[in-house]
Length: 181
Image (cartoon, rainbow, N blue to C red; front, side, top):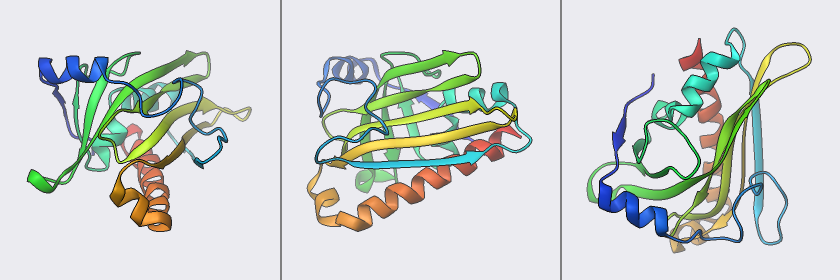
């Protein structure tokens, strides 16, 4: 279900590593209410999948590649500071969304990460992908975002853009479950 992660060219990785975020101080932003930003949070129980199996998918960009997003990253594994170009579509019409990992969660019963948007991303904000083990022992995967339109197309899209973001969050959840089983 998941595709492969390509290596980001050295020059591009350096440019993204030094690029400013498109919003205020990074970290702890995804899923929190901020003036002028839309908050999205979707969760799904990962029935029949372990935390370890799900974490392998999430921390290896498998959620993104699992929904058909091309990933060119400075590392095939998610780590703080890793940069990536997320690509939806092909050829010159493809949408390229540059991001930088701002947080990695590695705690007992919790795994995941968050990335922040860089210049050129159609949205402004952060998105997180966090797995947690509930009191009943089941793994829950939550995709959360706090964002606002960053490109003209995203601004013009308005509610349609937010609907697409919610649809993609649902696809991310199902891709993790399918790949982790």
